[in-house]
Length: 419
Image (cartoon, rainbow, N blue to C red; front, side, top):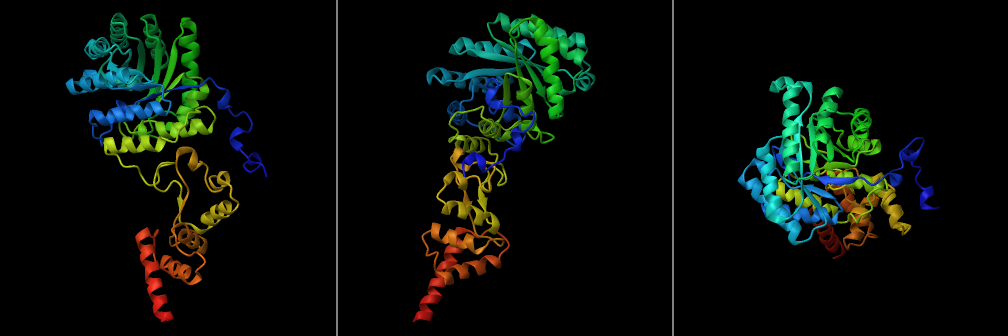
């Protein structure tokens, strides 16, 4: 059988989007800015931020938000250090920084650019939804004034500008049209649609992207790029980001492990996995586990065992039926088959391997495979039965120490019997 005959892919049926034919979307990594707004993270030391920045480059990420220098001296110092690292190490990544639509947030970005010579895009943001306007007592006129002053000031300082509307997915069309049109007239070269509170569904994302393209960008006559920035309050971070790509945005945002405000942002690592599997992102992703672990170490956010692809359990099974299928694939000597017979994601593509454990739901095939893989005689039926019986007395996966102790116990009992 040919590989293409072994999987019928319903994902490509009907009117499915062929990602391999789309214009490649750019990736903006927000780990070192929005990611650090997560209430549970530790703001990493600068050496850890630099490590993560280097890993972004290895993964083919195009741009990185390196901070909000207007937040204070420490934030500005870290942004300065990261910009210097980009310059000194000649990293193949562009930088941007967040800023409210106030001059006090834009001035530190300009200082970093002047000190390092590294171009930095200013990502100026302002709330746009009626609920935010009501809570803040903002009028549209006030928002337009702040937008014009901030964008013109940033452009005057020699910065490229991405104009961001917070809570875009709950904003009125006429408000968005007014804000974005003015931002373009003032010199913004990029717009960002932000699902700040994770309200959107994929349908809503597609409607929003089409509206901004047809009602704002196309009529402007300018070569303005469009970004999508998603949060995962409803668990739709990846789905919404894929919808935005299909609808035609130029760049999408994400963070390592999906960290960020409240429950976080679109997971950059899982987005890379999906774009690779869809044929859009073709970079080597074998260092992706290193990126995930670096973010986890630096921020103090553990990787849940059930986290897709990079969690401890992603390619690990103690179930008899699952293990039997994998073992049969191994016996055919086909690594491609081993990685796909019971997995929708090929582990080897991301520098990982399938693992078979022994648990209360294991079959004898699990036991014999584990014994053989760890240097024991898998053909010893008595040994295999001894371990199998232990597994059936437990309520979880056995640890390696427990299995080895069981094998030692059997060897001791067997030696006494032979004596």
